[in-house]
Image (cartoon, helix red, strand yellow):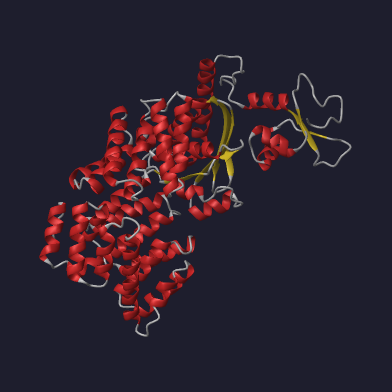
Length: 577
């Protein structure tokens, strides 16, 4: 209960009293600086105690609500009261949202659109929506990601939407809008908050011009739970208007969401678990998506998520690959039966056809369908880049990964993979430079560390490679590998490192399954031709999906002229070069 200073502390006509800037901002779902600006520039009804200093303020919720109503466009439908039926409320909020966003479109469109010139490419960042409810982080994160996905469906030549991985780096940041805008070189920033109480959700959002931090538009929306996710589609379509009329034809169709609250909650939990990016996260994301599809067997997005989850379970060997890829294909095909426009489902199907079926023609067709449906989906460009690199189409792979980097400039995984694509193209200096940038963002990111070591070794810079390897393995506590590098000759020391790695694999294989390709790879680094071929044969027979790397990885240059190697490639359906 708030403290009562005067008889009017609780007023039946004015509602509850708010006794500080913090309480006022919390009620409106905004930052304190935002409501202070509203009070100064737009007449937000805030009172001051005459007997106190000017900074002591109070306000009434009823006056806040009245002011919000007057602040809306005059022809907007007023916010529904709880007693109005849910369907009527949803219609009212939808109309209000439509009018509000058209106002944004007009303001921003005046800044960016012309009738004589092509629309300039704009860059947009969606900051993680702030969670204002206890233990609901997964919910606000899911809404943020859906907003990003919807916006990314626009043409990338006109709008570059920063991806979820890069956006997530600014969660709970103390950086200002100006700093974030400069760091990512974005034109506009969309930020907001989410408060959930039962099946009702209040979403606030504001669009900010990153160049001068001007707030172009801000509003709050109350929805039932399913409507909160559908809201993202409306925002994304109307942001297209804000970037100029020439973008209207590029609007992506709304993604069909579920009206089943249980299914929707499970779907959002699945996305949250997927983004953890580890074994436990993938296992739990599959469980959540399965629950979502059980609750609503027409929920295409949930089936697409389930397909992606099974793909990762297969790729990481969490469950038997044959089982995982079969279930992934079943889920992807079900998603596409329900909604053939889902780019994520096409990406999952492409990965099944590539990594498991080795049907390279159809895999490429699926990657290209995904990119055509959603050119702003970083995962589609990233996955296609892997395919192209392993097909030895190196220039195309680098072009594709650059597109993914444009959408995910702060993704350590995508940027590190770019380094590997340069490495496979035998462009070792560029591989090193790319991976060093990753390590500036995320020190000791193992994939980049290993790429640099192998690139230095390929360039004949053995002492640098040895020094880098010693520092890396010492930092992660692999003392046997550090000791192996102490030989006087750096080239021999690196060979000695491979022998230690081989012994570690043999020891590991006594207690758990080790895929044959791992042995083949170490034998290739040791330039043991016959043993490399022997273990590659086992890898192809076992249908290791990582066996695809043999086509492009420089480690296998030592056997590339061997007819047995060429025969293995032909058996996999690849061209022997």
